[in-house]
Image 1 (cartoon, rainbow, N blue to C red):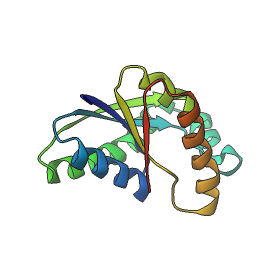
Image 2 (image 1 turned 120 degrees about the vertical axis):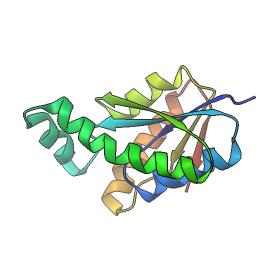
Image 3 (image 1 turned 135 degrees about the horizontal axis):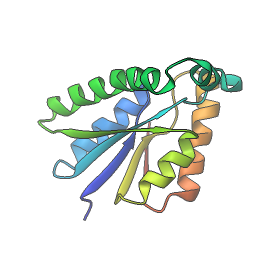
Amino acid sequence: MVTRILVPMDDSEMAERALEFALGEHPDAEITVLHVAGGPSPMMGGATAIALEDGLEERAREAADVVFDRARELATEHDHEVETDLAFGSPAKAIVEEAESFDLVVMGSHSGSLSDRLFTGNVAEKVFRHSPAPVTSVR
Protein backbone atom coordinates (compact mmCIF):
# COMPACT_ATOMS: atom_id res chain seq x y z
CA MET A 1 0.00 0.00 0.00
CA VAL A 2 1.33 3.42 -0.95
CA THR A 3 1.14 5.80 2.00
CA ARG A 4 3.98 8.28 1.31
CA ILE A 5 4.65 9.78 -2.13
CA LEU A 6 7.46 12.09 -3.23
CA VAL A 7 6.68 14.39 -6.17
CA PRO A 8 9.71 16.35 -7.42
CA MET A 9 8.51 19.61 -9.00
CA ASP A 10 9.86 22.48 -10.99
CA ASP A 11 7.68 25.05 -12.73
CA SER A 12 6.89 22.81 -15.73
CA GLU A 13 3.58 21.47 -16.96
CA MET A 14 4.96 17.91 -16.71
CA ALA A 15 5.66 18.38 -13.00
CA GLU A 16 2.10 19.64 -12.48
CA ARG A 17 0.76 16.60 -14.33
CA ALA A 18 2.80 14.36 -12.06
CA LEU A 19 1.33 15.99 -8.95
CA GLU A 20 -2.20 15.77 -10.35
CA PHE A 21 -1.64 12.08 -11.11
CA ALA A 22 -0.43 11.43 -7.55
CA LEU A 23 -3.36 13.34 -6.07
CA GLY A 24 -5.89 11.54 -8.26
CA GLU A 25 -4.52 8.01 -8.01
CA HIS A 26 -3.55 8.07 -4.32
CA PRO A 27 -6.06 10.33 -2.54
CA ASP A 28 -5.26 8.92 0.90
CA ALA A 29 -1.47 9.13 0.63
CA GLU A 30 0.74 11.71 2.27
CA ILE A 31 2.32 13.68 -0.59
CA THR A 32 5.51 15.69 -0.32
CA VAL A 33 6.47 18.09 -3.09
CA LEU A 34 10.24 18.44 -3.47
CA HIS A 35 11.87 21.35 -5.28
CA VAL A 36 15.61 21.21 -5.91
CA ALA A 37 17.34 24.60 -6.14
CA GLY A 38 19.58 25.15 -9.11
CA GLY A 39 17.66 23.02 -11.58
CA PRO A 40 19.29 21.80 -14.77
CA SER A 41 19.59 24.12 -17.74
CA PRO A 42 21.80 24.33 -20.82
CA MET A 43 25.41 24.54 -19.70
CA MET A 44 24.12 24.78 -16.11
CA GLY A 45 23.34 28.47 -16.62
CA GLY A 46 20.51 28.55 -14.08
CA ALA A 47 22.46 26.74 -11.40
CA THR A 48 25.49 28.92 -11.94
CA ALA A 49 23.41 32.09 -11.80
CA ILE A 50 21.86 31.07 -8.49
CA ALA A 51 25.22 29.98 -7.06
CA LEU A 52 26.79 33.33 -7.86
CA GLU A 53 24.00 35.42 -6.34
CA ASP A 54 24.24 36.87 -2.87
CA GLY A 55 21.70 35.31 -0.55
CA LEU A 56 21.63 31.92 -2.27
CA GLU A 57 19.27 30.35 0.21
CA GLU A 58 16.84 33.29 0.15
CA ARG A 59 16.77 33.34 -3.67
CA ALA A 60 16.25 29.57 -3.79
CA ARG A 61 13.38 29.78 -1.31
CA GLU A 62 11.71 32.52 -3.35
CA ALA A 63 11.89 30.38 -6.48
CA ALA A 64 10.63 27.33 -4.56
CA ASP A 65 7.72 29.30 -3.10
CA VAL A 66 6.33 29.84 -6.62
CA VAL A 67 6.41 26.08 -7.22
CA PHE A 68 5.00 25.29 -3.76
CA ASP A 69 2.16 27.80 -4.15
CA ARG A 70 1.12 26.13 -7.41
CA ALA A 71 1.38 22.69 -5.78
CA ARG A 72 -0.89 23.81 -2.93
CA GLU A 73 -3.41 25.19 -5.47
CA LEU A 74 -3.52 21.84 -7.27
CA ALA A 75 -3.83 19.96 -3.98
CA THR A 76 -6.71 22.19 -2.87
CA GLU A 77 -8.54 21.38 -6.12
CA HIS A 78 -8.34 17.71 -5.04
CA ASP A 79 -9.33 18.43 -1.40
CA HIS A 80 -5.85 17.40 -0.34
CA GLU A 81 -2.88 18.98 1.40
CA VAL A 82 0.78 18.56 0.48
CA GLU A 83 3.97 18.90 2.44
CA THR A 84 6.83 20.81 0.82
CA ASP A 85 10.59 20.37 0.95
CA LEU A 86 13.49 22.29 -0.58
CA ALA A 87 16.82 20.65 -1.41
CA PHE A 88 20.04 22.03 -2.85
CA GLY A 89 22.45 20.50 -5.33
CA SER A 90 22.17 17.96 -8.09
CA PRO A 91 18.48 17.34 -8.82
CA ALA A 92 18.82 13.61 -9.48
CA LYS A 93 20.98 13.01 -6.42
CA ALA A 94 18.67 15.03 -4.16
CA ILE A 95 15.58 13.18 -5.42
CA VAL A 96 17.20 9.75 -4.95
CA GLU A 97 18.33 10.66 -1.43
CA GLU A 98 14.84 11.86 -0.49
CA ALA A 99 13.22 8.79 -2.07
CA GLU A 100 14.60 6.57 0.69
CA SER A 101 11.81 7.80 2.99
CA PHE A 102 8.95 7.24 0.54
CA ASP A 103 6.92 4.38 -0.92
CA LEU A 104 6.72 5.90 -4.39
CA VAL A 105 8.22 8.70 -6.49
CA VAL A 106 5.93 10.29 -9.09
CA MET A 107 7.65 12.62 -11.53
CA GLY A 108 7.25 14.20 -14.92
CA SER A 109 9.10 12.49 -17.72
CA HIS A 110 10.58 15.79 -18.89
CA SER A 111 10.02 19.55 -19.02
CA GLY A 112 8.78 21.60 -21.98
CA SER A 113 11.57 22.73 -24.32
CA LEU A 114 13.98 20.46 -26.19
CA SER A 115 16.91 21.53 -24.03
CA ASP A 116 14.83 20.99 -20.89
CA ARG A 117 13.84 17.54 -22.14
CA LEU A 118 17.47 16.63 -22.71
CA PHE A 119 18.59 17.75 -19.25
CA THR A 120 15.47 16.95 -17.23
CA GLY A 121 15.01 13.66 -19.05
CA ASN A 122 18.50 12.86 -17.90
CA VAL A 123 17.41 13.60 -14.31
CA ALA A 124 14.41 11.30 -14.69
CA GLU A 125 16.61 8.55 -16.11
CA LYS A 126 19.06 8.82 -13.20
CA VAL A 127 16.20 8.69 -10.70
CA PHE A 128 14.74 5.60 -12.44
CA ARG A 129 18.09 3.85 -12.26
CA HIS A 130 19.00 4.72 -8.66
CA SER A 131 15.83 5.32 -6.68
CA PRO A 132 15.31 2.97 -3.74
CA ALA A 133 11.55 3.48 -4.18
CA PRO A 134 9.48 2.63 -7.27
CA VAL A 135 9.18 5.51 -9.75
CA THR A 136 6.14 6.42 -11.83
CA SER A 137 6.79 8.65 -14.82
CA VAL A 138 3.98 10.92 -16.00
CA ARG A 139 3.82 12.64 -19.39
